[in-house]
Length: 368
Image (cartoon, rainbow, N blue to C red; front, side, top):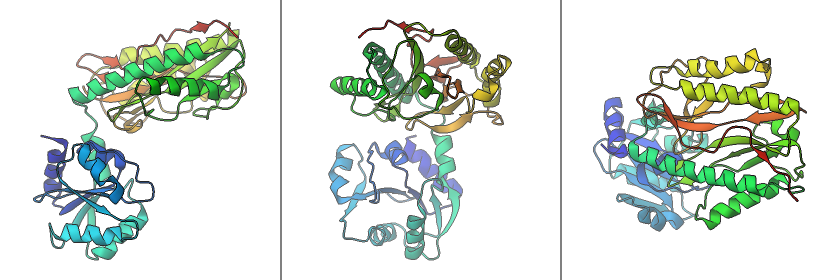
């Protein structure tokens, strides 16, 4: 069954009349069309026994058709009321839809209210956000192949970024060289804004690259990924620019031990909480538990952060086809920050990473 057929089956099972898919990445999952509509309305409406339709701004209609969506595409002009038009198209398929499935995690209240105005008797018994979590949980071989390709692109990003390190270049300058090199290779979209943080800046998890110049004898953290045909990569490496200080190397070694132990432990049947604990216990035993301040990992696929969370309290067993990150980090404010991350897919016997850049502490020679 296709993704769309599976959704239609769920709609039938839930006894709802229409599903309103509002998240752009989820629309892409079903239609192969991705667009950030900004303030405009982009929506997919799916019915149990009628043809679905895609609703877009008028300026996106042709792009949606070219992307491979073979169903109806209806557009609207900026001066038109999109929900008045949506109501007309829905009523042409099912006169008075009573039970709705909506993505409760992503549908803005204003658009929910617009549906209620158009269909005052509407009720919303089914949460399509929970459906999407489960639908996207187990990746197909084709999806995994796209993520393998995205992982290779991320490895190339690391190569370019490490080569860019030189005395005086800024964090932002390294980011610019990575992004420019990838664009020249045909990679037009990163999966998120590339992160490069040097020295104490790396102790701010997910901080933005700054105009700070990179200086010798400090660690540099890279966190990056690419978008390959709608599927994401996400990986982190921490390297030394020149000889690291003893404290920096100590923290790095603990983080690496935790990451490698968790990578080796991945197997079907192990729970997400158990995997988190394997890495966390190593960091805690070394005395840095208070500085590991986030979950071990997150799901990945058509978005960089998907269901499930690899964290304490999540007793979901790992299953072949699940894809998620393993990214322990130690962040000591004003001192040092280290994160090492690979995303993996669970196999019948273990876990296979999408990225393969060396994780041992690489010492990048100082150059001007």
